[in-house]
Image (tube, rainbow, N blue to C red; front, side, top):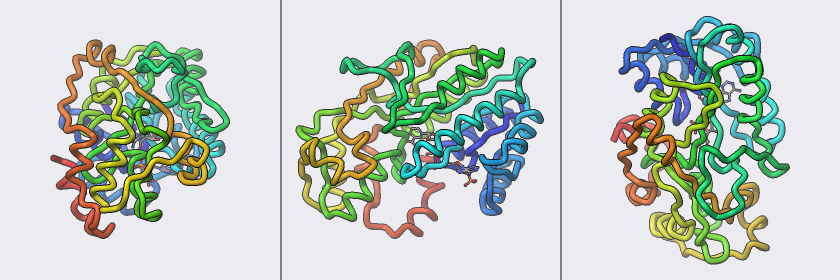
Amino acid sequence: MRIFVTGATGFIGSAIVPELINAGHQVLGLTRSEAGAKSLMAAGAQVHRGDLNDLESLGKGAAMSDAVIHTAFIHDFSKFQEVSEVDRRVIEALGAALIGSDRPLLVTSGTGLVNNASGRPATEQDAPESSHALPRVSEQAAAAVAEKGVRVGVMRLPQVHNTVKQGLVTYAIELARQKGVSAYVDDGRNRWPAVHVLDAARLYKLALEKLETGARYHAVAEEGVPMRDIAEVIGRGLRVPVISVSSEEAPAHFGWLAAFAGRDLPASGAQTQKRLAWRPTGPGLIADLEQMRYHETEADVVSAAPARAAR
Ligand SMILES: NC(=O)c1ccc[n+]([C@@H]2O[C@H](COP(=O)([O-])OP(=O)(O)OC[C@H]3O[C@@H](n4cnc5c(N)ncnc54)[C@H](OP(=O)(O)O)[C@@H]3O)[C@@H](O)[C@H]2O)c1
């Protein structure tokens, strides 16, 4: 298939692209920049220059392709509502280009955007939920597109990691660096699920190839890593004290990250593993955080990233 990939230059997209190409697919990768275009060409992909705000161009990319994977997102959490609206319009535009065909569209969401107040791991059956604090509506947009007859499914991601980046944990590390303490909320027993980036990339390929309308996939290898364990490994890595902050103090300490920091977000990938015969092979989140080089400069990390991501 010729697959249009938005976010093809991102942390996860740049792992998905070689996975697809190695399986014999062609990739048309979206990017805004010259550097992104060069990295896509080096990976053996074709380039579609465009921006998430240019819906016409996105529609053309989808119309030229046999399938679409949407991973791009504007990660400006200070404008979460606004960027979530952009995401909704993008999914609608990609879907509109596929109406009347059997060409699949796989969109990205998060396991943390699921209605699961019970403390049990969220499953693929649990409905999505958005709120003022978490206004992302990728799944709701995908459902609207499905109603128009498009073969669309959702990939829900937990914290996706390697030894360089770890989803929201990367922001927690930066905060600990700035504040000189690595914090968890209350007793720190709340959990975040996780998956290694190469396992997630393999799952995108499997899911796209077998996509069923309305399917929800959970790219979960570890159901829940306690936040206290995460804070402790960060504290050791940065050589800063590890502290507890109360839930009342959390907004002042964590800023926008407080919407996630104290939440217990366990999620299961069991149904997805069975359905797609997907076997994540790790390493785990704590193992990657132990291997991370906390005191390298950003330039060192970027230049070492491709080699280390491949491990
Ligand atoms: N990383 C995680 O642990 C995690 C967890 C849960 C959910 N997710 C979701 O998974 C997806 C991929 O995440 P990621 O960590 O790989 O993201 P990332 O590394 O931040 O990459 C973002 C991608 O989006 C593209 N992008 C950003 N703004 C754009 C714009 N205005 N127009 C066009 N493209 C734009 C970038 O492309 P260019 O800069 O080349 O244009 C880049 O390829 C996102 O939807 C994210 O929210 C990630």
